[in-house]
Image (cartoon, rainbow, N blue to C red):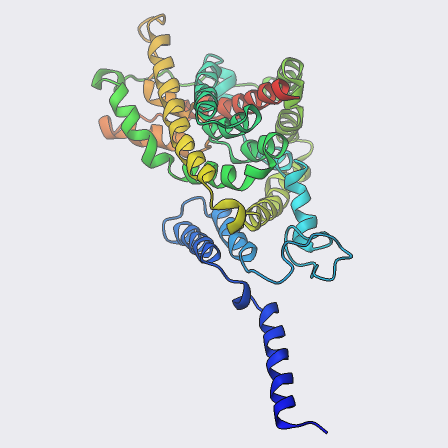
Length: 397
């Protein structure tokens, strides 16, 4: 016979058991903070249009990753607490998708799509511009040295330094190899500062240049032949990968995508990799990286330090690019000099940094269009960051 007391005890026990399985029963202040972070990223992406293609998936991924549940720390398939829904639980959808990040699969696929989007004509017509892209990688090695000073291990410092290349996929790729535990912080730092390029770079550019330098007009780039465009990705791949074989996954895919575009006989393939493929991979990499940014692992002092180092690396990279152009001008004849305002485009935040060059140039001369010139060091910066990644990986493997 069920008494009133037994009934209420039974009901209470089951309600308590149910509560343990809800997120309300496992919610912490840390989860609340991370959910707010995710909402802020979504807001910035929609309202301010800061890297919306990445920040919306990352922001929503943060929301997914910070819904707490019972057994969230259990990762074995046979464990009764494994509900197979969390990113750290074997057998879950998010866990399987995250292999694309942790194994370094997604970033090279993004580079494949980027290669099919890029036009290297400006760089081919004026090869000196590749030196600006190389100079801007000063931010990577400056941030690497600063990270070591902050107490990070050498491998972690290398992964953090890549933020200075202003290249999110490269930062994720290197972090997956050298600092898997820091992927979330490094990714969000890289993409956040990429979105803030129009805010971070202009003050440095104005500070380092004179009014006379800002008014320099550059010669229009020469017309590049189809043969040159076809040979460039082949020669570029062989040259860079022979120097840094560790960068082959990124550089190989970048130049392969470009060859698909420039050959003109594989238009369907080029359209696929620069359209549907890169869109799908962008969604997956953003969502899974965001989901990995859980309160227990993201809310640390190390994360704050990474954000500080990210800002420092961008400033150093901009400084390196602009100053290198000024130095080059000392050796160039009048009429061949380059406008130092294109130096900031040496970071690989394409095409945002090139647009900044154009915008600042037009402030001082409404008829001086620098965009096509800035695209040269901009695409060179993509190659440069991938080469720098290969150098760092070769150091630690």
